[in-house]
Image 1: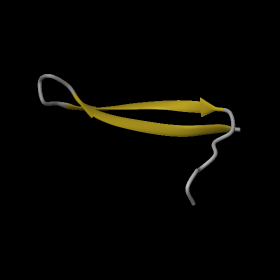
Image 2: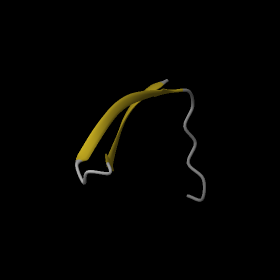
Image 3: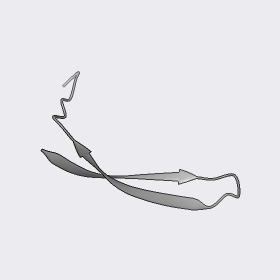
Image 4: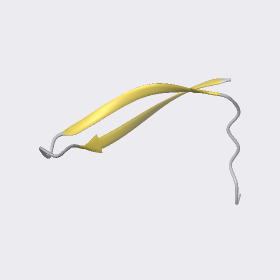
Length: 32
């Protein structure tokens, strides 16, 4: 399965950047 994901980070200039990417594979959640 291909799962779309997004990550937001703050760079050295204090600006927020959002990266959209896709994660291919099986995602398993641990710990309930």
